[in-house]
Amino acid sequence: MPLRFFFDECADEDVARGLRRRGIDVVTAAELGRKELPDEDQLEFARRTGRVIYTTDRHFLRLVADWLRKGIEFPGVVYHTQGAFTKGQAVRALLLLNEFLAPSDMVNRVEFL
Image 1 (cartoon, rainbow, N blue to C red):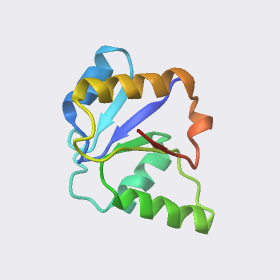
Image 2 (cartoon, helix red, strand yellow):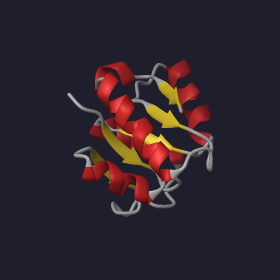
Image 3 (cartoon, rainbow, N blue to C red):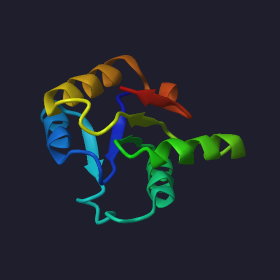
């Protein structure tokens, strides 16, 4: 079963389009009208919908650490610092994750690119 992604508002929409062209299921905060919602609301949305969050927002790292301490399960986070990758590199990295990891592998996991 392939990964399904939720791009938070910090993630590049061009990367989402690149993944979609390759058959990956991606939704973005912008297209869902979820921009400017608190990170906790975004993570809760990802949890309810079973989508791995892709972000360049460091606040998610603290938030998921807090959820782990509390025993709250989340479907996974993929993180890298903003500007660390070109759009093409980000697309390739996410495709690679999709190829080798199942949704169950990503539960309560933070993958650093």
